[in-house]
Structure formats: structure tokens, C-alpha cells
Amino acid sequence: MPKKVGIGGLHRLVEEYPNTRPVKTYGDLEYTLRKLGVKPGEAFRIINEKKHHKEEGSIRFNWKMIRFTLYVWERVQEEKNGYLKPKIDTVKKVVENRKFRNFYLAYFPDIDFSYTDEVRKLNKLIAEKPQQQYFKEGYYLYPGSRKVIPQSHLNNILYPKK
Image 1 (cartoon, helix red, strand yellow):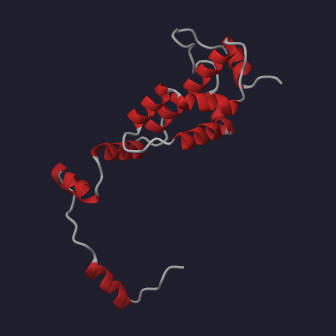
Image 2 (cartoon, rainbow, N blue to C red; image 1 turned 90 degrees about the vertical axis):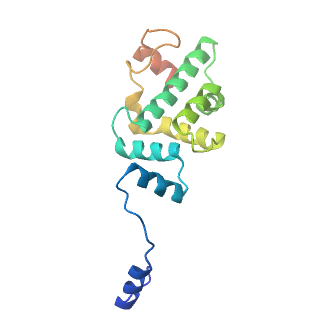
Image 3 (cartoon, rainbow, N blue to C red; image 1 turned 90 degrees about the horizontal axis):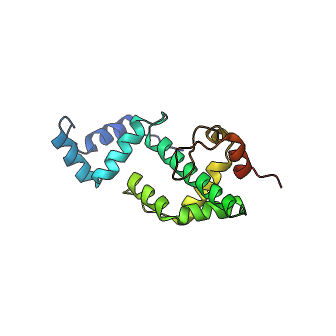
């Protein structure tokens, strides 16, 4: 429960409020970011995420679709090799891939890569019901080609019959 601040306490808070420079120019912005210890890549990522939060083409959407594509491609490769592994094993293989890490570092240069966190996040994301709309024909091409993966093939590799 927040501590109640009387009128005198509020007056003291206002008087003690730190002096901040208004951000009106790029120089002011740079000064403030340096003062806060925010690196340029981090600032750009945060602004870009906030500005394009839920639309296609946003960082979050693109990163999600890249992860899904890498997952689908791994499943296609497993099927080609004759054995579909359990979903979690496929997710681990995808996250171990150098391509995954390179994309991660390109999208999030200021955030340390954590293998266990990324495995958990991708596994959870694939299982979420709202994400199933992105596992449809038209979103994925076969690796190294321009041929669209048909829905029947997606169903076979993503939801195999036991």
C-alpha cells in the first residue's frame, strides 16, 4: 500500500524533484540518454517497439515469424530425414542454430542471449492458440526455394498423427 503523503510532504517531493533538461533537440536527447546510461541500439529498439507495437512489420512480429520459419524449416528437414522429433527437441535444435543467434543479435543487440529463455519462449509461443493462425499455407516457403509449403504438409509436420 502506498505511503500517504500530506500536503507538506507533496510540497517537499516537488521541491526535491531532480532538475531535468527538457528534451527539445537531438542534442538534448543524446545528453539525457547518456545520463540514463541507455545505449543507442537499446534506445532505437525501444522506440521502434513502442511505435510499431502490434502491426505487421514491427520488430516483434518479424522476430516471431523468423522463429516460426526456422521451426517449420527444421520440421521439414526432420521429415526429410525420416523422423519427426518431439516438439521440444526441435525447438532446442532451432535455438542452438547459429542462424537463430545471428537473427537474435540483429534484432536485440543490447539484450544478452539466453539459450534456456529462448527455448522456453519459442516452445510456449508455438503452443499458444492465438499463434496457430500463423501456421497456415502462404506464410512459409520450402528452404532454398520459392515454392510455398502446402497446408497439408504443414499439418503433417506440425501436428503429426500419433
